[in-house]
Length: 236
Image (cartoon, rainbow, N blue to C red; front, side, top):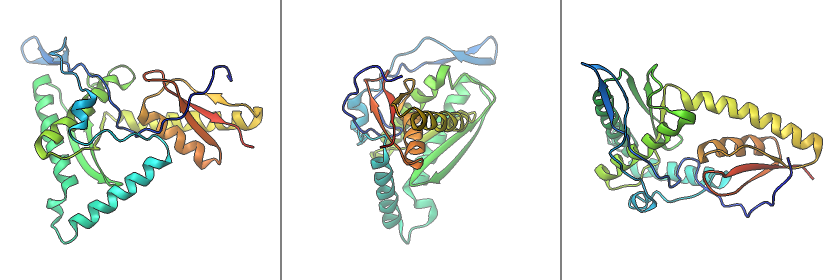
């Protein structure tokens, strides 16, 4: 598990990376039947698109946690004395909810949409039993998150760090990755050797980095997307 030369770690945001997304239209099946994924009217979400909203911050380590805290503090100061309805993060969630509600209507999919603010970030959760909007390994979910952020940027002119979850996928994935990281930490301690995990997206790598840091070890990311992975280093 120690093969391969480690690359210089590039810190990256837990959920903000440039991804090329093929936007898929969701067609009605039959007369009013449930929508299915269809070939796309293609819309690439490029680095330039996201940069237009200030989305280009990169960090999947604890450095991002500090940035998150700063952002949350800024929001609190800016909104002091305002009504709760004037909170820009609440507004961000409302815009995202409207966008996703329209998407569900087009796809003829059932789902309840919940919005909330946590740790200085707007969160939107779509409660549905359908996995059409999650896709294999969450690929469709990641694409929809980027598109939803762009919808918010277009409406507000401000960057968006919104987190989207569909059908509880992210929470289930978080629990699974926490267990995986815990086992890998123990392996690194027992063997005294670095442990390389399978490639993950920034959201998943951030979860692993946090678990490793909490266990008192050090981790870093190596490789290029989409093969970028976490390497857990043994203790001294």
